[in-house]
Image (cartoon, rainbow, N blue to C red; front, side, top):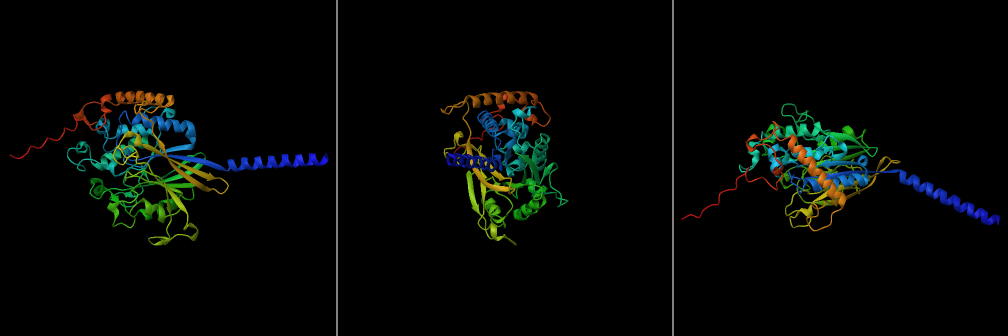
Length: 417
């Protein structure tokens, strides 16, 4: 009897110790979620805004808003709908940062690295495009940067410098990096972008294409304060326009540098769901430590919002749109990321119009977003920054593409007699 009692006691003790160990192991990890969108290209129609809004709101409810951050890795402006053209992109910034004064109802995007398409302005694009009515690329970009930062977000442009002072960043209110508290973990973001040499903004600012050096210098500035560092980039996985450059894309940037577990990219419109990249032995003039030769980084690129042939389903249909979700498992005992996971999260259809059933919560959020849009359009219908020749904002400006009344169709050529 005593032997059985002793055995039972030992079993119960072992169970208790196991449960305690599991509890400690579980509490030792914190999950940090980075919600990524990129290359949305001014897509601000009723088939875009409400759908994306409903998905991000559902992620906030599922994961906890305090554990998440939304990051836009560039090309928020170019192309798009009438409201994008009339507002010079202000409507797009308002959507991602917040259409209301209630933070709980806003997407509240905290980080934006502008892409080459966000610097379009007068003289940058063919005459049939509306940008010829915009201010210069630099002036309009400054307008959008000011609007984004006014709502509490951070615009990251570590490789664009002032023309007169090479040590000063080119844009007021822009930063090279930002430190955010997500799920109780200090996460640092570093922003890099690509600007085509022929763009007007390339003549107005100093663009550094030495991405390796800029990234290393910026990481050195924040590595003592940040527990995790995530580069966010609008360069492209492999950018053919950088073929003569020492760094020809995000693949090389990720493989040749250290100090971060993941890189979130954009620009090439080719969705990549958590590509694993092996680090190489050398990058330009520096060697990597031996213990990093076999480590990998996660690369993410959603290619979201295009509606073109590069969409996920290959048909150019809206169901191809996705949002990226990067999960970082942070080990609080070792004070580092234990592992990462990057996955695509689908965007629900508009009220189920694709024939697929949509959850009631998505429908409710889509309706709420439409109400927010209506109120925002009414409040901003006659703002000074609007392109006056196109008249005040209306709800009809949420059309699919640049309205014909703004951009007349090209005349049909006649055959020579």
